[in-house]
Amino acid sequence: MTRGSLLVDHIGELVTNDGRDGDPLGVRRDAALLIEDGQVAWTGPARHAPAADRRIDAGGAAVLPGFVDSHAHLVFAGDRAAEFAARMAGERYTGGGIRTTVGATRAASDDDLRATVGRLRAEMLRQGTTTVEIKSGYGLTVADEARSLRIAAEFTDDTTFLGAHVVPAEYADRPDDYVGLVCGPMLAAAAPYARWIDVFCERGAFDADHARAILACGQAAGLGVRLHANQLGPGPGVRLGVELGAASVDHCTHLTDADVDALAGSETVATLLPGAEFSTRSPYPDARRLLDAGVTVALATDCNPGSSYTSSMPFCVALAVREMRMTPAEAVWAATAGGAAALRRTDVGRLTPGARADLIILDAPSHLHLAYRPGVPLIRQVLHNGVPR
Image 1 (cartoon, rainbow, N blue to C red):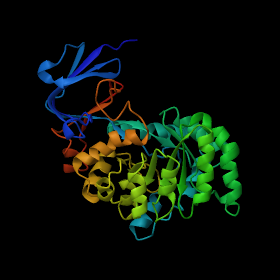
Image 2: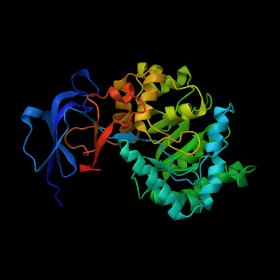
Image 3: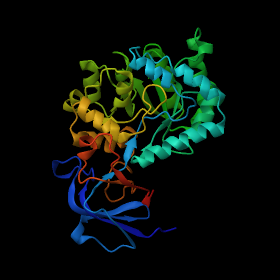
Image 4: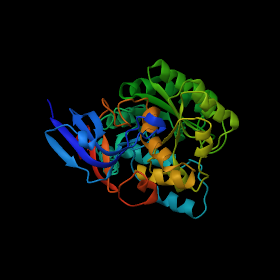
């Protein structure tokens, strides 16, 4: 069914991410954009705008691609506000609180989990996130991981099987047995609902040998590879991810020169999650070091109830500029086109002909205001698949 054409005109600054003229953001001034059947059909100077069935007047505001949040844990129950308060009082983050959420998630009904995902997905959309990846990882039984992914798949095409989040308490003394469960019955039950497989490769979670075995099984089942790596300290995760051709290695907080060189020589994206550092009072990743080495960088929220309970990509953009030495343009690119690269998507993260018509109209004249005015609700309007939301 055709939706007719929609013209967005009087755009003061249009961020296309087309990379032309040496500008990664592909900024166009005094622009317009035509949408047909949910896709971008044309962009160009406002004075040359074609006729359309409907029109939105941007009033001189900036228009950007919708944010692409390529790392989020939305299927859970309960919260860990007390844990957050303890960290703010000086306790160190170790990742151990994950098991608290596992217990609450296992006890929750499908409807309760669905309501949480729906609430957070709507919250993200209001803040300009039009594409989101959603992980499992708080069930850690065959049935709970499968239902987590089944529910996640109701909200996104980018679902990730994270049965290897931590070793659950009932397998604490038998980690090899748990890896066997993940690679066998759990993967078989989860794979029909998943596009990706992920492992938390970190001390206190899964070592390199276990991570390699799990990811290899996921690849054999047709899933793409992602990896939590080098969050809590230096480790083998980043280089393992590059070796396996991972689409993305995420966190990248503690990197050696060899890690950076491996990323720079690969197509693996380094996805940085500054909300986690903010919420755990940990050192921020050195984005400048990665960018200067030629690494492709994405930004994502890591939205989860323990270490980063934010759904706001604008907040992460502001953190990246203030704390990780990214320029505003680099941060906006990382939150849009970078996220698309981390999901190996070419249909989102840009506003060029043929792309999905996911865009945000700011209550501001420039993308600079996302970092310049942190904490201010600057998303005036969101279009998802060409439909105003």
